Image 1 (cartoon, protein in one colour):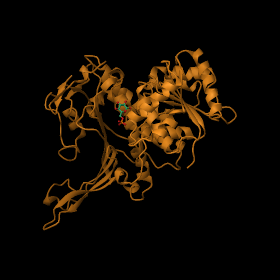
Image 2 (cartoon, rainbow, N blue to C red):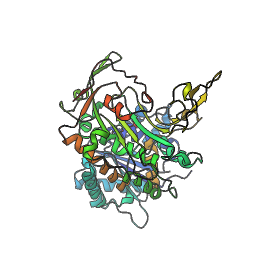
Image 3 (cartoon, rainbow, N blue to C red):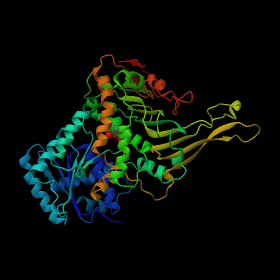
Image 4 (cartoon, rainbow, N blue to C red):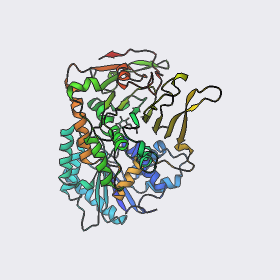
Amino acid sequence: MARPDNCVVVIFGASGDLTKRKLVPALFALYLQNELPEQFAVLGTSRTPISDIDFQKRTVEDVKTFSSIKSIDRKKLSEFSKNFHYQSLDATNANEYEFLKKRLSDLSIKTKSKENYLYYLSTSPTLFPTIAENLGKKGLQKEKNGTGWKRIIVEKPFGRDLKTARGLNARLQKYFHEDQIYRIDHYLGKETVQNIIAFRFANGIIEPLWNRNFISRVEVTAAESIGVEERGGYYDHYGALRDMVQNHLLQVVGTIAMEPPPIFDATAVRNETVKVFQSLKPIKPDEVRKYVVAGQYVASKIRGESVPGYRDEKDVAEDSRTPTFVALKIFIDNWRWGDVPFYIRTGKRLPTRVTEVVIYFKKTPHHLFAANGDPNIGCNQLIIRIQPDEGTVLKFGIKTPGSGFNIEDVSMDFHYSQLTNTHIPEAYERLILDCMFGDATLYARIDAVEACWRFVDPILSVLEKHSRAKIYGYPAGTWGPMESHKLFDSPKDDWRYPCNNLATEGESCEL
Ligand code: BG6
């Protein structure tokens, strides 16, 4: 298998959580599979002064703690860590980039990288433009004579709204061209999200059914059982709509709803997803109440244990109105999807962790067996399980064996766990490798980011600026506010998840 060009990866924010939890384990997994360049170096930077040796020791510990690889070969891990180096850097101080430049040049010579540099911005978002500008001022973004590529991966969040996203982009593009900028959305790096595209366009039987003539509704759910944990400071400033919907879940909607691209490359694929975002039917301020339900978890007991409410979490304002749950009913105004509702919901402190897409197919035009039971039986559903227990399930009705003509629902399941010896790469593995190859297909293009903000902004402004906007409290461990159940208006008397709420205390309320 082809390997990327030798290169140096610079991680800004090397002492942060993302580096140890995601980036280092992803690089290690790629290393074990011989997918990294033959020669490479990782240069960690952050303010804390530490030596190369200490950074290497930390790398070993991070892999041991956070890698999902079961038995780690200690010799390989030690070899891997030797590629790690460290440079302390105050990212806001342009003069210090001189040291960075020197370090990069040395590492480039050592690894025969011909000045191929991948910059990974894993710092606080406020530093993104400053780092890009400081790199630019030292000429560290310049690609000379066709050799020495320079790429910059920008972590989320990409702005807080349309205006700030545009502002950030303008500052990045002052020095970097659009094709050097890789805006990460780790949902696009998930194997199961990519598989939506393969499932649709590599199977002849799917695409003819994939439209408003056969599909009655689509549901996209991303439920998390955890709360905001240590991230209260960030989260309270962003909330569920920015944290999950504007980026991850709309990108999932993009893969579900896009037209087939003429070829499979970054431009063609992203041209199609951006059309979906541009076709999202705007939710006007006076429609927000009809199409959006926002909630925030309140204290409860789960399996006998007290669970704090969102407002009791560290670094969260005690009168915060930041939603930790949001449900939306949206429409895509085009020929394929006109009038088909897409229901999106996401929340923290829900009863379980599950991300999935459910496609509901229309009922048969004539209910031949309705007299023999539930008329909704045999209403086909395709469930794309993004995580955990990744897979695909098709539900369909069969005749119950025996007398009469009773129909019951059964399912045909595929689980990724059934594939033997197949490693499902973590999102960050795929995305880092793609960036090394210069393939931006699974990264968000600026027009898509802007289109998503354009859709989300009016909703945010109602929820945040309108004093009468309703935010409902839901007890931690339940499936969100009751109002969201009404919004979803499920075809069965319940939604796909039975109301298996875990909470035994706490009440729904209006905050
Ligand atoms: C992140 C959000 O982007 O995605 C988190 O900031 C969220 O709040 C996470 O928990 C969910 O990612 P995943 O891969 O666990 O679904």
